[in-house]
Length: 70
Image 1: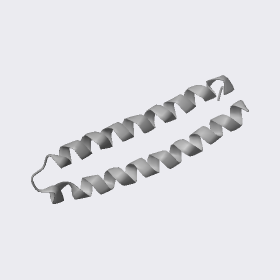
Image 2: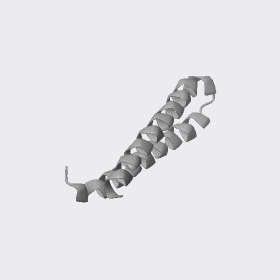
Image 3: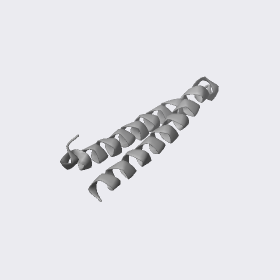
Image 4: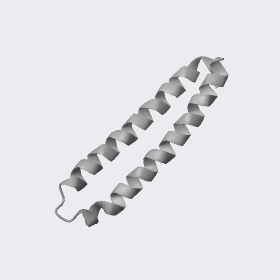
């Protein structure tokens, strides 16, 4: 692709991570309001895993961007 768009790809990756983290924060606050926290335990674990996966992918994307722009 166009190397001039590499920084745009990096920004997109960072925004995707922010969106993921924000969604997980919303899940966490909603689970905290449940009377039976066990109902949301699976969602909390899934959110934790999604944030970890997203962070790894963003790290790889940013490394690619850094390599491209030098």
